[in-house]
Image 1 (cartoon, rainbow, N blue to C red):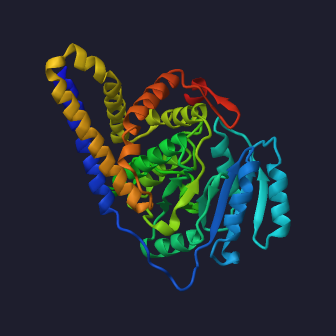
Image 2: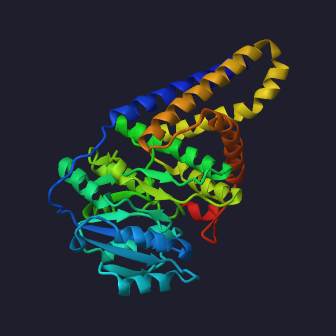
Image 3: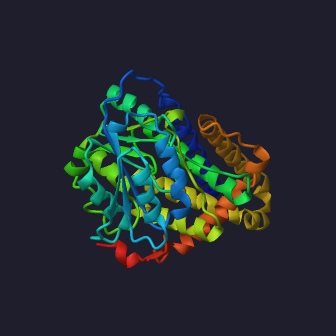
Length: 379
């Protein structure tokens, strides 16, 4: 048993250190251009987001970018609250081009349908997607414009940070998100992209059309970001890049309770087995097995007591490695991470991982007031 445990942990630690090195390989981007010339259609699908839209609209109004060079397309996905009214009122008051359209359901994925519908209405060359519960930095489009001019990409993935008020549940989500960003940026360092986030994503309209949008994965409820990224990368191998810039960080809201946290992660987990990248699947399985072993550690130390010191040492190395990876990610996002607050994270994360795996066995999860079932995610 000790050899299985050791092999798992050594493999995990090596993978994390490789990703940490990859993180460093992605250069920081901070160049400014005198004149902005890239046109953006900002696509925002929403469903029952009345409590979040005012803040989002405020940050949209604050964007430092020529107003004639971007438009906002809100796509209403059968909202039952006052979301439409809020946007309609903003449209009248704002000097910006704000358009409100209705989602047309064609598949089992409401968000993919919404983005597909918005792309049809888009007037600009570049599609920029974000979520209704996000806050956009003032230099968001300016930074993307400079990056696009310099690198000539087809898709650009941007950084996303979870808000935290310091509470236990929000701190957990922020640290978890920082770890995902570490994996995302680290994988870009090796040009073997594992993750992306639709809350901060831009791509050329022609690239979306060229790869037939979400066709081929629109039977899967989630994955509007990862699956599209994989298709564009396959068609344009060197044209999917990461914008590592503090001026492009999009802020998003955490979930309010643990039930919502688990549902969100079950939704994320539902697309892992459908990804084309086998490294992503391997890493997901490795993380799961390591976290299972964390929970099994007390039993291992009881039934294999002669190796207790080795078990504790390996766990210690894992915790230190995770902390180093998070410190690196936190430094980029200007988040200070207390080791004493972090020390609880590995054990809680292990419990959450197991709960997510158990909860996703039947492939069913609740999201935005809708239930998504496994039967809807198979061809």
